[in-house]
Amino acid sequence: MANALKIGVAGLGTVGASLVRILQTRANALAVACGRPIAVTAVSARDASKDRGILMDGIAWYADPVEMAKDADIDVFVELVGGAEGAAEQSVRAALVRGLHVVTANKALLSRHGVELAKLAEEKGRLLNYEAAVAGGIPVIKTLRESLTGNNFSRIYGIMNGTCNYILTRMEREGLSFADCLKEAQRLGYAEADPSFDIEGNDTAHKLSILTTLAFGCEISADQIYLEGITNISIEDIHAAADLGYRIKLLGVAQKTESGIEQRVHPTMVPLDSVIAQVDGVTNAVALESDILGELLMVGPGAGGNATASAVLGDITDIAKSRPGAQEVPVLGRPAHLLEPYRQAEMQSHEGGYFIRLTVQDRTGVFASIATKMAENAISLESIVQHSKQPAAPDRPQTIILVTHATMESAVRKAVGAIKGEGYLIGEPQVIRIERPKG
Image 1: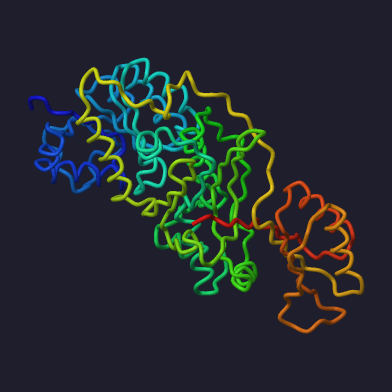
Image 2: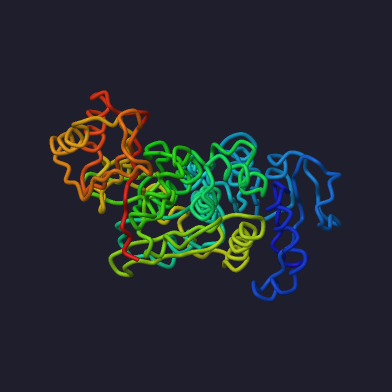
């Protein structure tokens, strides 16, 4: 096929099969839009006998994606294998060494090897596109790499994991426990059999590290992110948040400070009337704050076969439309060799402060002791209330909820540690940050 852009797809799971199906069924429309045909000429997956609902006529089959990257008659290598190492890393590297363009949806790979792969792509003069790696249905990568060039970013934050957002939404709406919501998410296919990568915050951290590099021009540093998942969020926290006028969301936040860049992933209370509080279910949202534009909030599907395939398709069509010899967009927003070393900032004060839930023995002096420990650490309290549903009794544990004004993370941790040493605390304290987004 003259002038056709020849595609090799490694990985024919839900996303890969959807992508090939779209490329085949919409071939004529894509050829018109891109000014040239796009043809899948090679694929790689483990099981060649499985019916995936795609046409295999004229498509070369490879059991090994690395072999396909090295030998197949293709112009673009699409990696949908997954994983930070092994076949995914080896095949992408082989494709770039050979001089192929690469499209990937692999945030784990990019968070681990993104800088060196970017250098390799730029040395070879090839594109490495990865829109589907972060919030698949939201064009946040393209926005940061191209549309908002010249903006100075101060903060990026968002809901970047649909599994966690689904669980928290169900807990609030139906009063279910975390465990029950997780089981339902697994039944519906929103959560894996082993959901730890999602619910412990690792998936969000990988995505955040990529956005941090694009926004602030630093090297990727996924290992220097404060990480806290949602496994400790209880229905009591959900109810207390609602009573105070908040919803709990798992946010990834990156912001620039005088001492460096702060990256954190953790459950967060956001005001009920904020836009991001309305983002429910498996939907994702990413907010960008900059000096020229102000705040931009993008909302859309973050995962799923069609949403991810759509983002991969967009990357492929960008390559099809590119002109030979034209200056390509740097993989990570600026040339990889000009990325600054990542400088980690200490956890800073947070607008709106902290929510602290304590279960304590009902005895004289507990309220006064808690207030004293807060004052000793220069923490100003917005409120301190007893939140128990039952009347106080000497043998009945009581729940005390504190909301602080803006303060330092270290001060809160020190105060909570001092309270734990007093002997009246039952179980572990719950500490949740409160953020008040602009939008």
